[in-house]
Image (cartoon, rainbow, N blue to C red; front, top):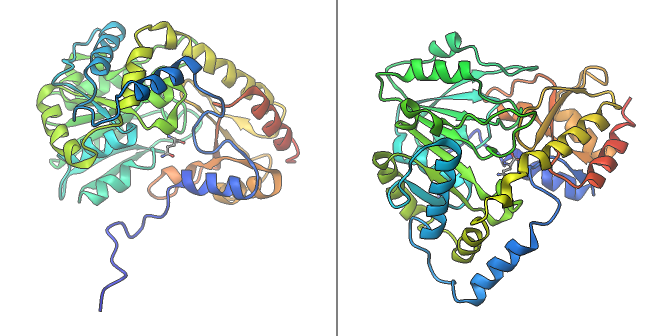
Length: 383
Ligand code: GLN
């Protein structure tokens, strides 16, 4: 008899992003759950990718990525953060940020290795660590500020701590790392072999004149860090699933050993088209202002509802609490919002290992103004 009950991830169900997007579709709801734009990318970019296909760029790209694109990333990181990454040995193009995260973890995490994560955390981190036999050591952040108390984080460290995962600007909370966080991180990892995985996919979505503190800025951290980036967020093309990973040579060597047997290489025409398009940095220079306008509009509209806005310094996401509306669990109210009011959001408890429920919902504001207006019109009806 074949055993049909085996599971490598027994406690894991379908990702909340798929669940909520599906529920939104079934109920014909406005989907502010999964983070993706509902407007088109620049037609110039689309034309460049189409040209790449027409011009014969349709076979495997090099395993590490199209050279012109890697060079372009090296220039960008150098210009923005003063960091030198060798495009041949320290930059790899990936099939999106999530694959880069999976691959970096796979290259280093094995049985018994402990990984510190900051919750609420992007939902791929914990299952990936568990699948590799590692142990998740969560530090739970809490609203309203989702601030990190590093004295408490310190207590999570053991001889088995192998890696720390950071994410700034942060999904789902929109919080960002501050100087005090960087200082603490430098102090905590100094003289250790602890590696860092820095998920920076929202690096260009940062508001109110704040600066993105990429870990590439700090030589003491850079030497132990995988940095993950995303073209989907940069170019409004999340469905193209293209991203990249930066790491010092000794880490990237191991990353590529896994990458080559995981995806081998990423689709060629997108890489060629993106490389052409990004030659002009003006293409993404205005990204923060573009999204800040959306954030500001969404915040001002939501100000007319009974939801309470939490701070948002970056990312696609605005989190809210709802104590003036109900004391339901966040999962329950999120379902009710889709079914009865036609608006989908993400219950933030889904981002905690223990499903800690602070009664917070996440809304994605990377949408047309009209979409945001219609959604909030519906949310106003909640009393
Ligand atoms: N990063 C996106 C979000 O947080 C979704 C990614 C995904 O669906 N896997 O909504």
